[in-house]
Image (cartoon, rainbow, N blue to C red; front, side):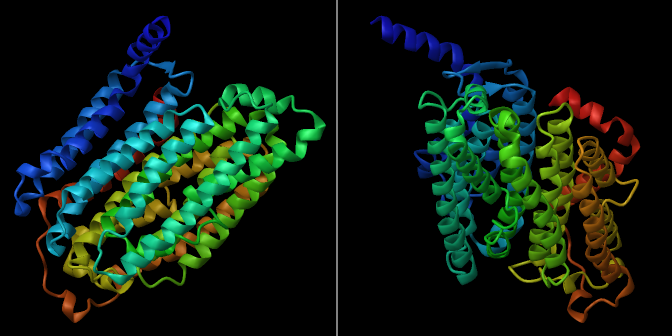
Length: 487
């Protein structure tokens, strides 16, 4: 009885920390059963509204949740947790809004689509607050398993099935490596803890006989995380998964899982492995440099916007890994969060335009942007602003997020990596500006001459993302200070 009473007391004390996640899990469970029994087959779209309401309610709950550490110190609510949870929830809302156009056109509205999104987002929210390697692993799996299914959501399309199978097989392999690394670190810590704070102390004081064990474990954990964020050389799943997945899911993958995985990256390597930086700093520097170089060079040869943005995403991950390398110093997590925030704005606008032009599954080629400045001048202007911001052209908001990240890297002595980042940013400007040139300096294709009406949702997403990119230029000098108050 005393044990049961203590367990109940701890549960009551700690449960409020998980209210935002519980809202999503309960909503998704009710949507699948029994809620779906009472919705006619032709009215599945109403679950989109329920999902958006649940995400907004979860966001309000995040706002009011007090900071604290609970569940045997396996989950913590702090500025880092809340900051990245806001990003994940915003990406989820944008994804659901963008999904309506394509799902309606393809006749693929189902309750499972929205339930899987909510389950995946709940996993991400658990992940950004996890302070133990075990809770991090289970959160990663909850996040990833749902995305595997969503990538293969179009069951009648071969490339969608192929992308889902490839992603699942490589994801399972990377999860095995991550779990093996966790077991090695647990052994190196004397078999007593997997808590990040305690693990940092144990690993820093590990005997020389365990140095190889520590290095191997840290390297395996690094490999597992690099796969989750699609960093080179663990990026091979990314272009195929981006290309084969439904375009709204492609947008989702480029925003939410990256934000959650980067938050976990910052917490694990900034807290758990801070005392053994010599074991992971050089491998992470290689991964960051390789991601910047290969991502930008490969993007030059792409013929579709989804694959171009996939390789571009790999390059942007390379830039953000500079912030992970500075995670143990003040300003590192804030710079990564700010970069991810601006990246979310830009990606959501770009994918909204792609979905509008895509129609029923065609029209995602880069050539489809030919002459857009004449046929759809407002849409072309929005795409131009987004492309220039992705390229880091001043004074757009993408420039400021890169500037703060590169400045921090130089201050921490990562000069060579920063030079590589600057040079590869010039390469990125070439393929971003090529899209702009195609829109304004090429004649439109004959089949693109007939204008189509944009839906209200697409108009709002494109307009808001473009407005935020332009508005951010007015407060460039204050962005990092603002990020510091949130994270």
